[in-house]
Length: 206
Image 1: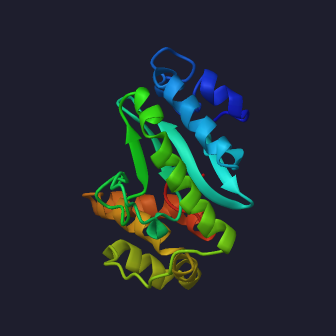
Image 2 (image 1 turned 90 degrees about the horizontal axis):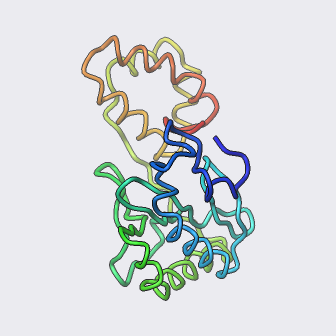
């Protein structure tokens, strides 16, 4: 992945083989992404590179992150459970997501057209950050795959590390493992995920 945030707007995030090619999603949507960047900076947010993407912060609190795909580009809000979404523009990135958290753009001109909405949503998120407000932590239970239950029985430390994860991170492992059709695939994944679980990370975190 890239280590310089300016490279994102020139070459891309560096996470796939389309990096620094005309097919890179960032290059396709670079004008719209730059407009989003200006709105986030104009809201008084600082900028950092996280997971290969520009992330915008208030103090040490993540507020939003921008990203590009082949068919659209997005502004995704952290702590989406707090967002009121009066304009009904927030979408869920996938069926397993609990809260709508992103604004999706399919044309670069949409950023300018929605600038006031984006600014108001950023201002709302900043208000929560300044007040120290965080989403309520809910106790979420999951139907664990049998292989994971057996792994926890054999390794209580792994079980404790898993329970210490946030509900969202636990959910990411359950979804990933449940998607595997074969038991041996689930076992291999559990072995591969072990270090991540002990590190307090979710499936897709590095």
